[in-house]
Length: 253
Image (tube, rainbow, N blue to C red; front, side, top):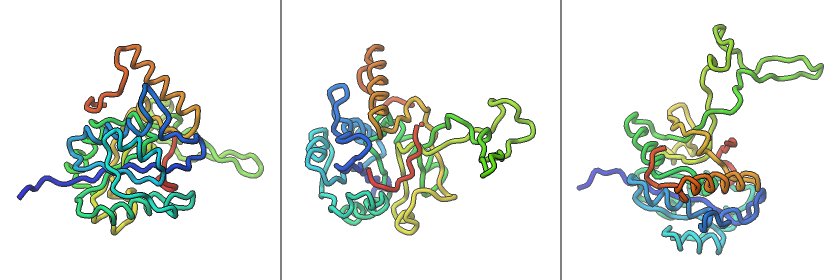
């Protein structure tokens, strides 16, 4: 009997995006946005199966055309602004049971690669952690941020170490980049979250931590791909090693 752990990769993509309408099927380098995430999932060695959870016909067709399974249609009540990603994941697990681990991928993080997925899974297994999420370095350190009271008096958000006088001397700080969320399935059922004191982080560079929510984000992705084309790399490799806005997995993508 095989002891290889099974991993169900689920891509969440609903049709009612507000910041950038129809973002999941917008074309970049001749491919719909969702295709970039499907390719990364299919290329990951640790992934056993790749499925889509969506309520939208066009997204479903685009995902299927790029090799993703769509074994069910997301119920309308789980495709609203009020529904949470945790609820959507639980629904998918009920529809497709029997996997040891679950991997949540968002199409809005198209620069995450198959190698990122495999490296994050390997780190989680090596540490015996029940969950792993992707992170990126913050652009501005919270150690140099302030609160301001009603009388405009400033107070430090975080107290930096006494020896830190330059940015380079501040402790590194990271934020969620939304690229990948991994968890042991039984642990997720019990905790209904990916974030806990037991969760480990997988750090990605900011250059590949684009999180597409607005037209400006999409244009930044287009520029990144155009830059790769100029360097004779027109599409992100799904097996090359390699954050962003804060994505906390609440309203499902």
